[in-house]
Amino acid sequence: MSQFIVFIIVFVSSLVAAAAEKPADFAYGLKIDASGTEALYDVTLPPAVYQGVTRRDLGDVRVFNGAGEVVPHAWRPRRTEKADAGATVALTLFPLKAAAGANVDALAISVRRSASGAVSVDVKSNGAPAPAQQTVAYLVDMSAQDRALHAIELDWKAPDGFSGKLRVDASDDLSNWRTLVSGAPLLNLEVGGQRLQQRRVEVPRQKAKYLRLAWAHERLGDGAKSAPPEITAASGQLAEKFVEAAREWAKFSAAKGEKPGEYLFDLKGQFPIDRLRLELPEPNTIVPVEVLVRDKAEQPWRSVARSMVYRLRQPAGEIASPDLSVGASTGRLWMIRVDQRGGGLGSGMPSLNAGWAPHQLVFAARGAPPFTLAYGNRGAQGSSLPIESLIPGYREDAGASVRVAKTGAQPTVNVQSATAQPQKELGGEARLQEQIDWKRWSLWGVLGMGVLVLGAMAWRLVKQLGTPPADKT
Image 1 (cartoon, rainbow, N blue to C red):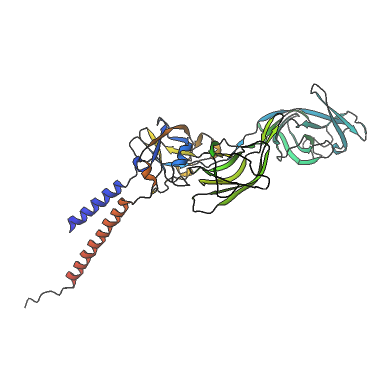
Image 2 (spheres, rainbow, N blue to C red):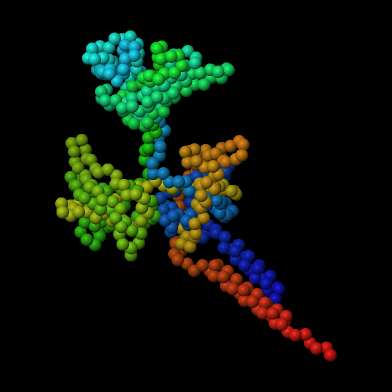
């Protein structure tokens, strides 16, 4: 009996070992160009992967090393737009001169631009030219910038020990002003050989053509009657701008649907589509359309967008409707339903251009290359790690280099970019079909046999303990 138990244990262990995934368990694969000299690599998924996977969540994607062993991988968070960091620009200051103590809100300001682009500023008080005794404020022309300011860095002429507050106003017409910052503290202090400076003013990110900088009345330090310090230079940090991430595009041909005005498209893959461009067959076409999607033919259609699309001929060339946003839809089957009241699309068939922001996979280069990205297994379960588990201390804004959380010093780990080679067949299309998992059922069968054997042993032991001892008299 004990030998049979040992046999069961050895057999179960062999089944578990045999159940370990290998590249041939997946339909297709891509060789990854990664030398293995770095710890981490990332690769952007090519279109072939979306056409070969069986799961919308990409749970049947694996990375194998040269020995056929699975290595850890994670997905970077997908970004359909990215932040373009704001640049720092020099700001030209136009002094606004008036009588000492003049109220800047009572000044009339006008800006003139010559044919050469030169700018001059006129200041009036009570309808007359303001007496130019001293600078009471500064005008900043922001009309040439396409972004709002995030912060202003200032430099001024003032003795040590200065502290004051700056007011920042904004306007689009030089007549109506709104206060952005009522009293930002600015400092230039020295105590015991230590210098404390505050020259930066954070401002709300509001786009305006003009800014006005003026010292607030509650100035500190050298007394309210003294002249305000002269601001000698200023620079501005522009606010970040969100721009759409680069997208992959693929073009698909239409087939006629069941009803007039219905056009069907089979994408033959699990693409994370979020942008569409509909190419109309004839110029000077304007039609309302509805976009619908589903995963399988037996499922009902679900509407994801409605819009007016057009293709118009102009003297300078044709113009077409902008890209249509459809959220993030991974359905394989799409339908464009065209309103027929204006004649529909006329003759010809439309084409559909689908765009998506591809996923980025990060993997640990454990073992020897070559590394293979394998995909396409109907029975595979998800095995990706959270990106924070693969890379402790991960921050998306860190770019290619990420910091690893560690007590004391925090070294950086580079995530090296890698590229995928053309698709090759591994286990073939048979892996895409529903299959009987013989390994799993064999394992359960052996475990069931083991339970029966252990039950028989327990029953035999109970009977032996329950037998009364023989009478020796």
